[in-house]
Image (cartoon, rainbow, N blue to C red; front, side, top):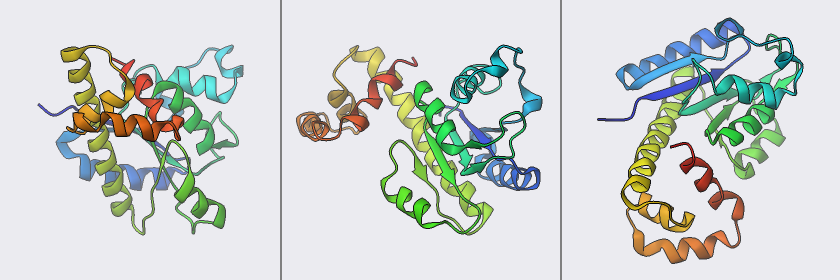
Length: 204
């Protein structure tokens, strides 16, 4: 049985949020659900609401209805977010990293040069490039489905063989255990990528 997908959408413009939600639901169908990051769907204590944005987001995303998210789909500019004035995708990405949840970010407006640069070099997220909401939703769905499959394989791998080095875990996920030494060698020059694997495994 396929692992259910849960997508959390961060979009601070109500009409745009509605349009993208509908497009995501169309592509998800029975594969899972999409939930908007909406002030109406969670509560915070007075003390929690005074914390740093990253801390607040981490705390909120650990609880229903956002807990167990497969993927966060995040608008680049979230400055109009209720109770999170000036919020950006960088802050959401930082919280997501703590939770080992992957993130896709997008910009509905024409992408500035810095965003095009980030699309090539940004660490820890996927930058979506699209012309229609349907195309955005299709790309996000494909990413979410891939991450859901990886999550399921990770759980099986850890259950069957117990803890092992990140390189061997990644090789097992690829179905190429003989590549573990090559992956380990690659990770010597890119510790950021390979270090995400233990964090992801720790969710199980």
